[in-house]
Image (cartoon, rainbow over all chains, first blue to last red; front, side, top):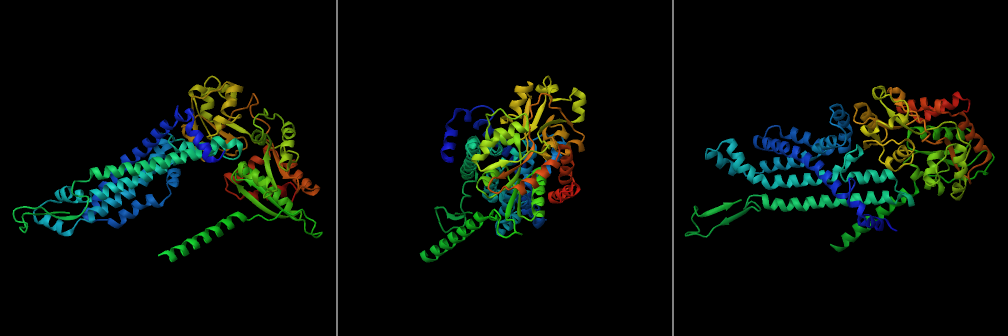
Amino acid sequence: MSVLQEVITWFGEAGTWTGSNGIPTRVQEHLMLSGTALLFAAPVAIAVGLFIGHTRKAEFITVTIANLGRAIPSFAILAFVFPFTLELGLGLGFWPTVIALFFLAIPPILTNTYVGVKGVDQDTLEAARGMGMSGGQILRTIEVPLAARLIVSGLRTSSVQVVATATLGAVIASGGLGRYIVDGFAFGTFGPNGVEGRQMVVGGALLVAALALLTEVGLGFLERLMVPRGMTEPRLHVTPGPDPRSEEMAQTTA
Amino acid sequence: MRRPRSYVLGAALLAFGLVLGACGSGGDEDTGTGGNEPEEKGSVTVGSDGFYEAQIVGAMYALVLEDAGYDVESRLDLDSREVRLPAMESGEIDIAPEYIASLLSVLDPDSGGATTPEEGAETLAPLLEDMGLELLPHSEAVDVNAFVVSQDTADELGLAAVSDLADVAGELTLGAPPECPKRPYCIPGLKDTYGVEFGDFKPLEYGAATIQALEAGAIDVALLFSTDPLISQKGLVLLEDDKDLQQADNITPLVRSEVLNDEIAELLNAVSAALTTDNITPLNARVLVDQEDPEDVARDFLEEQGLL
């Protein structure tokens, strides 16, 4: 039997889908890990991104520090965080993994938010200021809507990365789809005794890839729904009216 | 755009092929069976699994052979038995330290194990012969699964031996490598031999993670190896295997029959004769705790024993 055939068999077995080591349970755990990390990372990253984009203060240093979350291997962050979370009585598995994923989740969201806000047309901002809008009003009614697409796109990128990386936690006893991969290797993957190990490693990897893809597509769909109407593409749009050349009648949606 | 694209493709394939070729040839040398000139004794490759104890013993084998005039290549960083055994079968690795009972449980899971190293070696002999391998006489150094608790836990629950766990295991958490639920010397064995069933199981990588978890109380009982120097260093309590669940995992040289000659056998046997559980544990400590190089530690030991 080839490895592919072994994996197909595995997916066909009832036992693979039931119980505490069954696929539904593991997927649920995996989503909990990813979701919790994003739940904490998104507000922080968006808030900081909005701040530095709007005020133009501390841009370089903030983005550099944030990118440490990308540069430092998540595995290293996990190993570093692990003793501290043990000390704090947060237990094994879940919280250390969430913390490591938190640092991974921040950079795409923060960078996209920051770039999105910074990219708002200077003329538009000047006009707004000229109209007497406060900083807060500008942020809320102009910068955020215009940056919305990039922000959501950043959330999407981040989510996919987090889902793909949440497998890490399995090395410190977390649940999730990483369990199949880590346990599969531990059971042994060579020779005739290694069937189960191979099934779990390859099956687990396929499941993670599928979940990450689903996240990408699902959030992409959400992205289209969520972004304010008319924001999908920059476009100069003139509505037909009594006098098309009249400036009042022309609407610019950008 | 067609021509440049196919050039790029061709270059990429060529590069890929070169990389594959480089990977395939590795760094192994031919294992000659000597007899070139009187001085040259031919090459041998000594391998070991990539954990401290195996590396130390592997280094010992390599050093004594080198000292006797053999051209030795050391590969003391192999992933595991699962990688090393096929490599020995195919001739890439000639000599490696093995653990008798563990090897038996891998090559013949239904054999019922080995309570003595002699029994184990006997059962293994025909299986190994089919692979072109053989075991030399074993050493008295034994490294088995050890169930360990903190001093506080031992005092609180009155634990000195594994059988003491039977009544309280339901409230305790075991931390062990992920394959523990499948290994006869681990969870199934605890249940069958001792009637011990833990309330919870946390799959943890062997080593620092397990010990940290134990010290922080995230797990109550940890699986370590009996010659792990950190057990005494951290003041942990090794529960006695009073019902003999753990088997004869004596450290023994495993050798390719084609390479073996009387002189090599004599040299390796001398190393085995010098090794005991008591004297290997401090060597482990030097590598694990003091971060010394396995080869230096091995050399010191051999010089002390007059083997080098």
